[in-house]
Length: 298
Image (cartoon, rainbow, N blue to C red; front, side, top):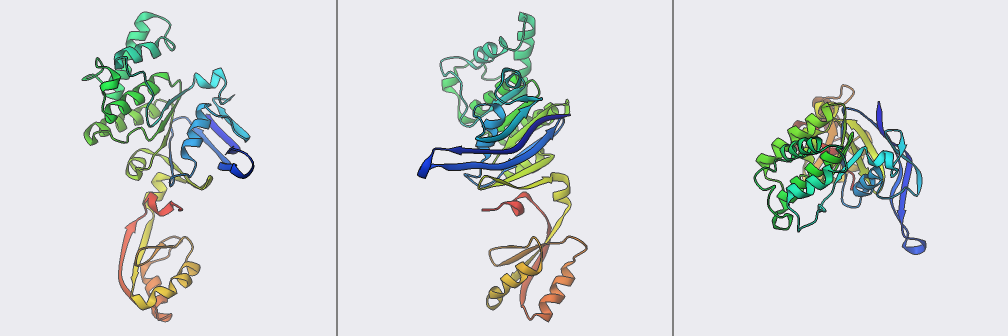
């Protein structure tokens, strides 16, 4: 079942000469059980997309629906939990008090609220400091509280915007397990992050944004099975890179040469044979599996 859908969504800020398009023509649908990674350079539109899904802002054009309802409506908001960086929580409250307050909006009876708060504390690994004032939290502690609060509020869609940044690596592993379990229970996670390693570990599918456009929408498992040939070229051969880029679909420049996807049966041996025929001297080669960084467009 589709939980989230964007149809030709655009969002612009400002007007006239100051008008800036943050997202343009974005279309995708996400199902229960998926973990969607959203990656791209700064200014690509990741946070704008997350805020649109949460209903915090409205699209300039197009439509965003959550669980069949227009994003931002009360019905859609009851489905979504959003954790942002930096996290927002009253510094004078303890983590326990903040979660208890949020639970009062989600659970009808006191026993249900207590159970929900206990679950959230376990989800965010908060037990050691839940009784301390939020204003005393480190960045990593605050991020864990934001994750727990968003999960507590999420009826079916958990939106995470850089929420694991600054979290202790050992705790982060536990949190990744909790996030994966959340999605496995027929719910949806959308994770925006600059940490490509985290996205590769967690996401079942990845949207790559560049300058407000979705430039790739790929299965993580399929991507990580593909291989890439990297060729380091001798200094005098660097001028032939443009020819190689034209010759091989999906090829990209590297620091000292070129990376060529080994797709449709293409092999490193065939590439080297072509280089010999074209008299392109190759200094070194290696074959590796593809990674998300291969899809990023500056």
